[in-house]
Image 1 (cartoon, rainbow, N blue to C red):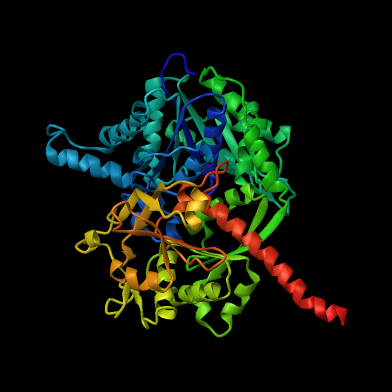
Image 2 (tube, one colour):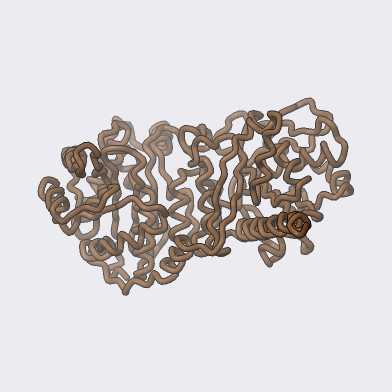
Length: 555
């Protein structure tokens, strides 16, 4: 523990290009320090003017990660929660929009007593207040790790960089640590790695007044001692503080590699932290299962943002976690739902062992998703529907089992005769879209005779939501009489949370987003059981194929 009870601050910046993996680097360092007995809080600063990513197109920003308190945040907070195995709050994601909004509100209120409001000190003071607030709110926190989004040199990131520079002056060298993640590319034609991009990036950072203490060098090839010495010499960093962040197949390998490079020890020494020894055996066991699975299973993800996998980041990771618990490698097949309305396009779904339809918004690709649901229902292929995926399952059941031709969601057809999915009552008068959906954690009561209860093994659960439309209770009686099972509902029974089809190997649709609570060492129960059902389906499919071929062989 930190004996002086003074929180330490670590700031991680990025250079050369974006998408180098600052979020995973923060998360990896966080879990290493936590495993050494320290209490760690993580935070992300996003320089964009949006208040949050909730209204942003997934193609631009990727997944929106929703927290228990309803905050719509950057997908990096998903990494933070998964690695630390802790639930965060809205204080862990700060945007330029939030900062400027707060300062302008205070100015209108007269809080600045007539002073001219400027970037320095008013904006930078607000940024620093939010950094310190995280430490104060969590009480006995030892270390706050803050990731600065974007790349050094971006004009919108300058107030954040100035703020963390000031933090170094206020708290001193033993309480503030600067880590810079940069790129050391390998040039194929020259046959060598190049350090010049890193040199320029550090020069840019030093021009702002920040001297990095540690460099994380993202690279496709191992860095020789000579290269590390060169980088250290030109960047004014000791060579032992030049850490290679080499490309890996699994992000969960990164904490182990950072530890091998001595990153956690360097941090503890620099910040004068009293730490216990590192115990990361569970993490090593998990990596062994990821790298050497006993089984394989192929699962299709049928959506409309399949060209940008980050739109489904938490789902991808949830399948990794579920694969670990089933000792299986989950191969994901990406299916554009817009293609599934074409002749025979559904046929290749037969090759899959399970199909998941994720959440989304808008009419595009909906009919393809509904056709996919029909196909898996009729062919007894394990199915998992999340949010919009659950709603598509309800629409398909109403149309093809209950005979309600044209049944739909009012999101797609306001005049449908059978609005089996409709707008939440509290959403009917909403004009401004930002943060106005049903967001965050809500309780759900499970029916004991259900796939879901057998997965969770408890009657009451809590899951995170992000939606405006819901199951229309006016159709509950007719759909349940036809065989649809309401497996989970809100405590007051006003909101249907889970639907299932009992006479099916595994058919589950949920209104919430279970992927947001899955963890590397604790897979989400529904993902775990879905993968297990898909493995069982694969086995039964093989047995059936063998049985069909046996008479021919005997003849």
